[in-house]
Each structure stands twice: as structure tokens, then as C-alpha cells.
Amino acid sequence: MANPFHLPPQVNTALSLLEAAGFEAFLVGGAVRDQLLGLGAGKDWDIATSARPWEIANVFVSSRVIRTGWKHGTVTVLLDGMPLEITTYRTGGPGPAGFAGSLEEDLAHRDFTINAMAYHPRTGLVDLYGGQEDLVCGMVRCVGNPDQRFQEDGLRLLRGLRFAAIFRMQLAPDTAMAIHRNRALLQAVAPERIHSEWTRLLCGPDAEHVLRIFADVAAVSIPELAPMFGFEQHNPHHDKDIWEHTLAVLSAVPPDPVLRWAALFHDIGKPQCFSCSEDGTGHFYGHGTLSAQLADAILTRLRCDTASRTRIVTLVRRHDTPILPEPKPVCRLLNQLGPEGVRQLIELHKADTIGQSILCRDRLEQYRQAEAVLDELLRKKACFSRKDLAIHGKDLTALGLHGKAVGTALQTCLEAVLDGRVSNERNALLAFLLSDPLHFPPSSI
Ligand code: ATP
Ligand code: MG
Figure 1 (cartoon, rainbow, N blue to C red):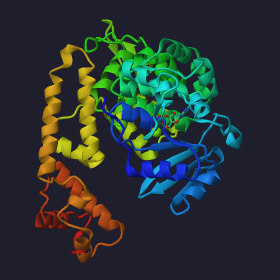
Figure 2: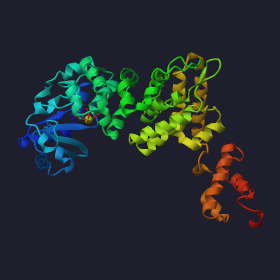
Figure 3: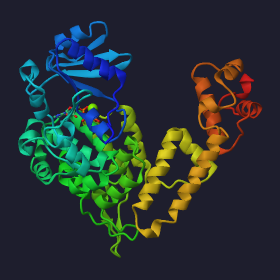
């Protein structure tokens, strides 16, 4: 079989320099896994070595060395612009006490067999736990005793689900059972670590499948999901319970973090909004607003960055408001959400429709039309924000407006253009403003 390993020259250089100084050094972790999977060059290159951190720093004395996790033995070395994470062999214990004596010990503390392989260009693959075989048959399996491994670090539960979701793998039966059994361990994991794993899991092609099987685990880190499980909607537009519908929508949106989080949360407020009309039909009035509130609270708790949280919450809040496929309403949306936001909102609507019963399918055509309207508006550079206006602040100062009045006048123009009351042309806008007594009282002209 052809050698699947193609290491960048910087990695080869780092391995050679460490060895020339009398230390062992191997490529380890995700980079080995990804190369075996044929995924090509990844973003991080992890090297494990017998050298202690200060010895690593000495070897790379002529390069930029960042003390990323000095106490734990991790040093980032920049070689020709490429960051390499070089870590002293570890046993998994805290601080310098956790330095290990050998590569074997180091590999034993890693989480899954697929992540516990090492590679050296001269000596080849070191695979002590059957990682290569697990990669071939698509198994995520703990190194050693799964209960013990999860108890050492609860985040490994979510990492396991993440690898299954992004590589379309299965959890090995004993590992899967241990994940269910130890799910409460997630309560003790730092929220930002949970958020980062969740985001990657959600973007995996098998996220739907993994979340269906491990819904109990999902609900430990996000308990607000639980009321959706099995909640029947009693509505002809829906042939699935809320959770199954959510999973279908999740799969149907592109694998973008904002969209996937929005899909996960878009109906999370539904159980609390349920009401039944006399004929037995279920309704969920106000669920968009409640879902948005819940999403905001959850993402804040998980320390999601503000920009992403705002975009996710906005999509959730608006997921249920119809999008008219006409220039004026789409321009309004562009003004409020920007081009990417509008595209995402249409994607979410399309996916929501795909997740509903067949009765709703004809709505898809409406969203395709909305997309076409959006494309056309962007193509002809339609005006949807103040900066697109054919007049600018300096035109208004020339007319004698100052300070806040300039902003207010520009906003008036934008509103009028969005409403179609005036065209976005310089002379038309100036005439429009001058005729508006709010900005130019008759006495001032
Ligand atoms: P990615 O593609 O996301 O970078 P990765 O497996 O490389 O995946 P990293 O967080 O970069 O993940 O970690 C590098 C390696 O360190 C892993 O492959 C694994 O061997 C080990 N590792 C990382 N986190 C843990 C953990 N929580 N428990 C045990 N081993 C871990
Ligand atoms: Mg990595």
C-alpha cells in the first residue's frame, strides 16, 4: 500500500532537530489519524517527544517558541510560519508530575484508539491499541477501560460523539455504554470546552444520527433539550415529534456552526407554548420568541462568543416569520440581517419545511424564489444600508445639518428608499429631504 503520510517539511525538520539533540520525537494524535484517513494536511501538527519543555526550547533556540502550556509540557514552535505543538511525553497526570518516560505511556493516556497512534517517517506507524483497524471499520473506541477514561476527563464523552459525527463512525459498544452510564460527568466540564465540542459535533455529517442515539447525553449539557424528546405536535403540518423534527432540520441546513446551532434551538420553546384547539389541533403560538430567549440563555451559559450568539438567536427568533419573495421585504431583511444573515434565514426556512410533513413541500418554491430575489438585489447592488445611499454625510453638512441631525436624515432617506417612496438617486434624495419639514423646517430654507 502507498504510504499515506505526507508531512510538511517543517514537521520533518522538527523531528530531525529533536533527534539530533538526542531525544525521541514522533508525530501523534489527530494529524496521524487524519493522514491515515486520507484527509490531507490538517491544521494542527502535534509532536510528542522525550525532551522536557526547557530542552525543547533549547533545541529550537533560533525559532520563535511560545510557552503554550509550559507546566504541562506543551510548547508551540513556529517553523517557517507553521505552528507545531511539541509536547513532552505525558501520563495524563497534572503538571510536571505527569511527564511520562516513554512513548508507550504517552499513547496510553490518549482518549481513543484512533487518536492514540504515533508516526515517524523512518520507523513508520506505532499503533499499540488497534487504532488503524478501528479507523478502517469506523469505530471510536476508548484506549483501555472506558469508565476510567471518562472519569479522568468528562469532555471525552463529547469528543467521542464528535468524532462519530464528523467521521460518520460508530461508538464501539463498550465505549457507547460507558458514555450513557457516565453522562453526568459532563456537568463538571468547563462550559467553553462543552461549547467547542458541541459546535464541531453539530457540523458533522452524522450529527443527526449521533444526537438521536445519545439524546440522554446531549440533555446533560443542555437540559432544555429534554422536553422536546417525544413531544407530539398534533398538527397536520407535522408528522414528527419536536425532537425528530429538530434533528431533520439540523441535517437539512448546511454544516455551518451558526445555522446548525439555530436549527438545534429553533423549536426549543415549543413544548412550553403548546395549546390545543377544540378540534384537537396542536398550536405553539409565540414559540419563536421563547425559543430565542432559551437559545440566548443557553449560549450565554456555554460562553459562546457574542457575535455568533446574536446571529443564532436572531435566526431562531425569525424562523417562523414568512419571507415574501419580493424585492421590498427582502431589502428590509437585508437591512436588518445583512446578506449572509438573509441567506442563512432562507436556508433555515427551507430546512424547517423539509422537516415538516409532505403537505408543506410547496413552500420550498417560495424560498427558492426568495433566494432568486436576494441574488438579483445583490447583483444589482440594491440599496439596503446607509452606506449604499446615493447621498452621504458631507452632502447634508453642506446643506447645514450637523451632528445627530445628519444621521437622522440619512436614516429617513434609507427608510424611504426601502419603502420605495423615493429612488436611490442623489437629486431625488436631496429633493425628498428638502421637502421634509422635519429635517428642513420652512424657516430654515
Ligand atoms: P482535531 O482534529 O480536532 O484537532 P485532535 O484529535 O487532534 O482532533 P486535539 O484537541 O488537537 O484533538 O488533541 C490532539 C491529541 O491529543 C488527540 O488526538 C488525543 O490523542 C489527545 N487528546 C486531546 N484531548 C484529549 C483528552 N481530553 N483526553 C485524552 N486525550 C486527548
Ligand atoms: Mg488536533
